Length: 491
Image (cartoon, rainbow, N blue to C red; front, side, top):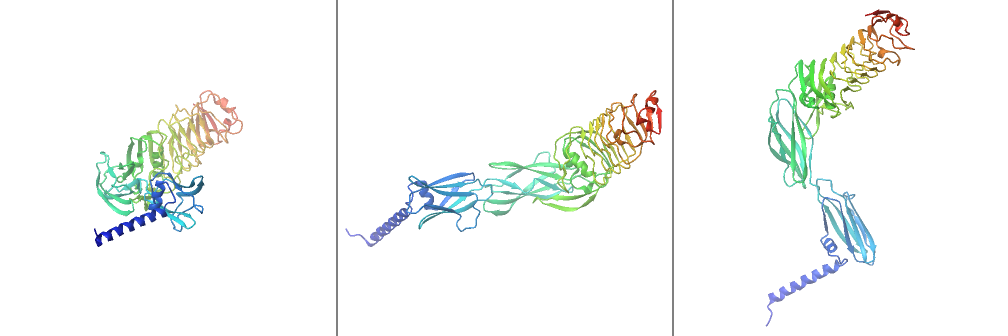
C-alpha cells in the first residue's frame, strides 16, 4: 500500500527529532552519572537556603576539566566555591554552597570547561524564610492617632500581629504592601492609638509567621505633662521609663518627685536623665529612624527615694527617645553605685535616700553644686571616695544616732563647704587617708567614742568645736589630732 504524502512527512519529522535528541545526548555524554547529566543538560542547580555540598562526576577528557565561578558576571560569588579534581575513574567537581542569610534568592554562574567543551550551570539558592522589623521600639505621642510599623518579609503570606488584651488603648487597622523585591515584601501595618491622659504605657506586640520566630515590637505611648509635684510607684523594675515616656518636654514643670517601688539599672538611668538640666528629645518612627525634635529644659530639684528598693539588672541605657551619648552606670543591690548622681550641672537641691540603702559609691554626688542637705540612712555602712566632693552648697549631712556607718572613703565628705553640724557613730572606723572623717569641714562635730581613736598625722580643723562623750574631754585634750579643735565640749 502506498504511503500518503502526509504520512511520509510525519515520519520525516519524527526521524529528525530522534536525530536531534541523539545529537544532544551525544554532546552531553561527558558523564555517566544521571544527577550530573540532569544538572549540565538543564544548565541549572537549585539549592536550598542551608549550607550544602554538591558533587558532579565527569568522564576523563583529552584536556583537564576546569571550573570557573561567576565567569565574567559581576555578581558576588563568595558564598559559592567550586573545584575540579581528577580521580581514578574520571573527574569530580565539588561545589560548596554557604547558607543564605538574605531575604532574596542569589545566583552565580559556573562554567565547566575541558578544551573546547564548555557547560554553563546557573546556581540559584533560595533565601532563608524570615521577617525583619525596621525597629523594635516605636514611640507614640500622648495625643494618640494613627501610626505604622514597617517590616520586611519573604514569606508567602503577611505575618500576623497580636496585641495583648491589656493594651485596650491600641487598635489594629490592617496592612498594606508597600514594595516588592523578588521574594521580599515591605509591609506597613497600620494602627490607631487613643489619647493618653495619664502616665506612659507600653504594649508588647508580637509579629508571627510560619517557620520564623516571633518578633516583638514595643509600642511606647508617652505620658501626660507632669505636674510640679508627682508621686510615682514603680511596681515592676525597669518601668520608670515606660511611665515617664520619652518626651522630656512634658517633664519641664516637675520639681518635686517622690518615688517608691523597686528600681533597677534602667530606672536609675531614667532618673539620671531627669536630673539633667537639658536633654534632647527624639521620636523613633516606623522606619526605625530617630527624628530629632528639640531641646527640653528640666527642673527636678527635690527627690524622695525613701520607699525605694535598689536592685541589679536592667538595661544600661534607658530611654531610646532621649538623644545623647550612652553611659555605663549599673545599679546594684541596695547600693547607690559609683557616680550615681554625678551629673553635670544638675539642679538637684535635696534628696531622701532609700531607707534600706547599704552603701554610697565613689563620686556618687560629685559636683552636685546645688545640693543643700542630705540624710544618710542608718543602714549605710560605707561611703566611698569623693562621694560628696565639691558639693559647695551642702550645708547639712545628717548621720543618725543609730547609724551603722563603718567606713568613710578618701575625701568622702570634702564638700568644699563648711557644714554647720555633723555627728559620727561609734561604729565608724577612723582612717587617716589624707585626713580624717572623710576630710569633713564643720563648725560642730559630734563623736561618740569614749576613747579617742589614735591619730598620727592629721586632725580636726582648728575652727571646729568638738563635742565628745561626758567624762572624755581630758582624753581628747591629750590626744594628737583631736586636740587641734578650737574647743572640746562634753555632752
